[in-house]
Image 1: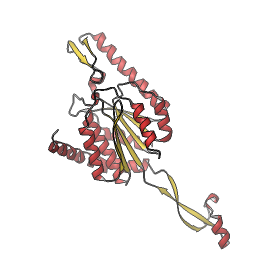
Image 2: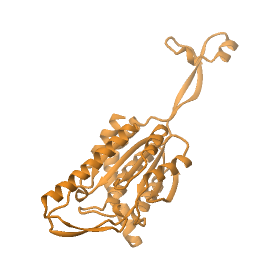
Image 3: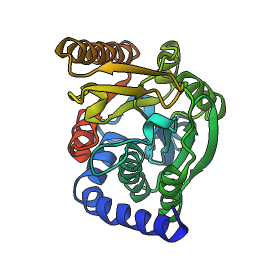
Image 4: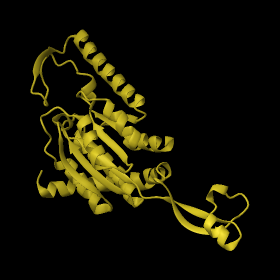
Amino acid sequence: MQIKDIVKKVKQIEIRTRKKTEAALMGQYHSAFKGQGMTFSEVRPYQFGDEIRRIDWNKTARFREPFVKVMEEERELTMMILVDISASMDYGTKVQLKREYVAEIAASLGFSAAGNNDKVGLILFADKVYKVIPPQKGRKHILSIISNILTADYVPAESRIDKAMEYMMGIFKRKSLVFLFSDFGDEYDSKMLRVASKKHQLLGMRIYDEKDNEIPDVGYARLLDVETGKEIWANTSSARWRYTFAEAQKQKLRALEEDFANSSASFLNINTGSDYSKLLYNYFQKK
């Protein structure tokens, strides 16, 4: 894309997501993610019903009457957005490519975070980590993240989700909100999901096109794996072949959902033609 086209596309995404973000997601985001813990704010005289654990014994001894520590919630959070940029994500048979759909969802999440003064960072990965944008605050930073997702060079290589998670765990020590975007078409080490979800709050989002799950009857067709370069000829007119393909995809999805459930991580399966805001709204409500 030319620079002017990129700017136009980013602006369109900002406009489309602004209404969804302000109307629904931002409030639910704030309610769902209330911060990392508590920090000391002030000391005041003890009142009936205060927790004994909050008593400030030094000040109590000095003034010979009970005082308690007032704690304040730490509101600032860090959101990390991990995006699979393997070649299968640069694909779509509907209005949007997967990459464009991911950019729009990331924009909604990013603007929700920015509205709560949280930091947002980005990791682009495929067979390895290709780009890292450190967490920062602000609208301009979110626009930069959207632009990077749209303009990345999508790589003809198998994606390694476990490597991306391992990298993030090594760099970002503080507990973060982690949103992982991929079509999950390749193998990965599920142990990293368990490790990551113990430290971070993890939501995996499988972004898929309807043709990923079911191939229509188009006769004999050459099917190409854009990540490995492998190709096969298939008789898509065969009802048995189409059924076998669809069942294999369903089995992969069930295994993926099971991996996330066993890791105590959340998971959403999102069609590029669906309204993602409802799914995110429900996710935030559950949290």
